[in-house]
Length: 261
Length: 261
Image 1 (tube, rainbow over the protein chains, first blue to last red):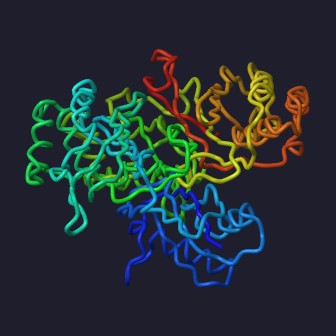
Image 2: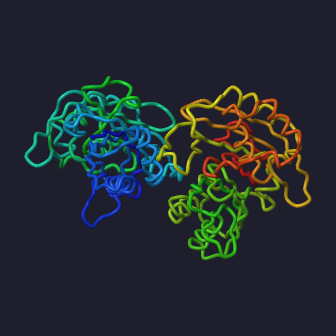
Image 3: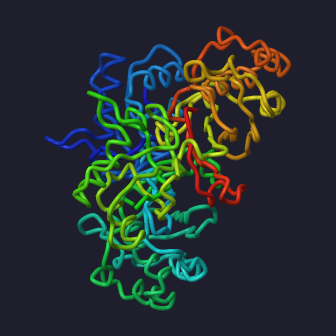
C-alpha cells in the first residue's frame, strides 16, 4: 500500500533531505531506517523536495510503499517513537498508487527567518539568520519583494536542473511582522538555492545598499553574477507543499511538499 | 575594574550555569575561559542565578573584576567573538566595586514555554515542553496561577538553601497567548526547582486532572510530596533580573539576574 506523509525536521546536523552515498546522516536515510525498523521491510522514501543541509521543514511531503496491517495513525505513532527527536511525522494517510510528492505538487511555500541586532541571539542559533545591524528597512524590502511576483526567468537567483527551464511562477512573496523579519514565498517550483539568493539580496535592500528598483533590474538581468552572497540555510523552512486535490490557503493546515529552495 | 554584564545562552548541552569540579561544560566555565583568552587574566565570574542543566537565559546577570584598557563595547565584542555560538554577552558596563549580581537583585523573571500537540515538533526540541494533548484549559491554568501571587511559603514547589526561609514573594504569574503556552513568573527569589514544579502542576490543571482550588490547596499544604513531576528544564528561560538602581517593567530592556528557578 502506498502512503503519503507530512514530515517536520530540524535540519541542523543533517546533510540535507536526500540520502547520499558515503555521507550520513540525512533526513531520507533516517526515515527509511525507521520504516525498516518498524516493518522489517526495505522501504524507499520519495520526498517532495531536496532541502539543503541545515534547512528545516514543517511541511515536507514524502511517499513510500509499505505492507502495513494497522491503522495509519498507528504507523505515524510507531514512526515518531522510532525516529530521532529532530524528525517527526505529522500526518500519515493512505494514497493512490500513482501519487508522487514532487511531480504532483502544484506549489511549495518556504519561510525564511532573520533578525537584525548588534549581538547574536544564542537561542536563535541554527534557526534564524543574524544580520549585524540595528534595523532593516522593512518597507524597501517589501517593495523589492513585489518584483518577484508572477512568472519570471529566475536565473539571477538560482539554476534549474540540467537543461530545464529557469522560469518559475511566484504566487506569494511578502515580509511578515513580529520580533523577527520573516519572509514567506510560494511558487510553483524553485530553482536551486533560489530562496537563499533572494534573501541575501533583499537584505542588501534592507541595509540600503541596493534600491528596490535595482532589485527589480537584477532579476530582469537573468545574471547569477549579480548576486554576491548566499543566505545561511538555517533561516529557511519548507512549510508547505500544495497539491491539486487539496484546498490551498492555510499553509499549516494543508498537505504539502517542495523542491530545492 | 568591576564589570556587570547581561548574558544569554542556549542551555542545551550545558550542565547548568555553575562551574563544577570534573563536569564540563558549564556556562560559567565557558565565560571564564573566554575572559582568560582575551585578557590573559584568571577571572572569576559571579552569576545572579545557578540555572539548572538545560535551562536557558536571555537575562542572566554576571559580574567580574578585570584590568581592561579599552571600552566596555570592545569588551563585549571581544567576548562575543571568543565565546561559543550558544553563549552571548548582550551588554557590558562598568559597575561599582561592591556590586553583587545575586545579593543585590530585588527580583527575577522566568518564562516557561510549552505546547500541546499529539505529535512533537522537532523545531521546538530543547526549547519548549511538548505536552501530548490536543489542548489545555488555559482559563483554569490562569485561575490557578493567581494563587501564586503574593507572599507564600512555597515548600510544596521547592526547597530553600539549607536552613533558609521557604517564603518567597511572587509579583507576577500569568499565561500569555500565542501559538504556544507561555508562562511568566516574577518573584523576589525562587526556591530550588520551584518554577518547574509549579509548571508540572499547572499543566495538571490544564489537563483537568486538578482544579484551580486544589492547586491553591496544595500550595497552602507546604508539602513537596504533593507534587508528582518536574517539568523539563529546556522549557525554562531566565529572562530578567531586576536591581533597585534600575527601572523595573519591560523585562527585555532591563538589566537582570536570577537564582535557582
